[in-house]
Image (cartoon, rainbow, N blue to C red; front, side, top):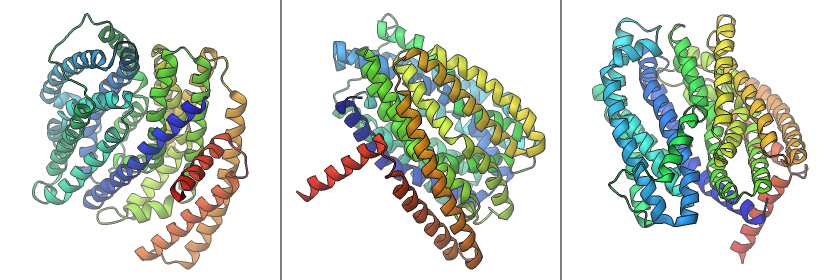
Length: 522
């Protein structure tokens, strides 16, 4: 990878990561206040299932729209200028708004049938509540998809800060709703807060677009080549970009027939597992994609290979130690973060059981998304989609096999197995597309990071056992002390070991930090 590409990706990832840390931590607080208020109860299960379908549609349609738009918008902006790209994007936005409004109306009308399909195990009061909540939240589809489109345009123009801040706005609104609306409207107040939070994501991005001079045009031009290209890319991307959400949806559908609280336990475990994913993988993916799109437009495939491996190694650097650390500290962390109010010891046990299985696929899901972006930058959405369809089928098969012996834990394990299969198959086809992929650097780095993570895991495991024997977990201050010491010890151990491994990406980050400190000191 060139120094310029390296610098661009690292700087963009740093900006996104800085804001994402706030957003994701606030998102975690959001989950905590919901857990404390409703626990792993019927109300939480109904809310999660009611939001499942709008969220799934948004991920499939909105995610595919944004993913297809970025490389086309970037290419058009380079060749014809920003305003020509803005005119094309306006058509995409206008068509999307009209289509999604119709889809929202249809979803509200057919809610009883949709709930029967996604939650076949629900009946009576639970089923009726889920229908009512889904009708409140169906318009979320429009706002979330529009937010992704606007964010995609901003990212294409190398503005990463404002789109990253949307998660902060979303979580802040929902937290406010729990305290201001839930006491009066109960679970309906949480649903209303979710809808307003989605709208807030759109509103905060509009001023940034105006500042960049991106003009909106009230027109629909289907004859525009860029519009047709986005349409061609979008159809297969609808499945490829939504692979993680499809796994979650399958889990929830099957979990609706298990004991009460299974859906909630899977959700809270998934949220905790995705905390490092959302902090690091999302930032790296968002930063890498525009660079890959630029390199694809220039047909610099050697640079694309180096950028892809750089992204894969950065993801490993963060997700492998996070997975090992969370696995070792699953019980004390879940107890500390969630066991308050309605979230009891039973809820903790159910969540930890699912979390340990989910963590086995953390790196696989992050690595898949980097490689997926490489294919999309090449404007090849068919290859990852075909693979994703196959692995979704694999996930369903593994779920049906494992749900009986492991209950909701089997669903989490099936997700990890399918995600790993998906990563391996996508990598195989990527090697055929980018023949000069620097594999030696990739696998050597992965081995070093994995070894460093396991050493860290052993140290934290011993510390966890020792502290568990001398600190009474009945007191919150002891839980904080226990978790804090283990986390700091883990960070110190991992840093000490990995810095001795002579990893290119680590050396690059270290040199950038040293250079920044020197410039500050100067």
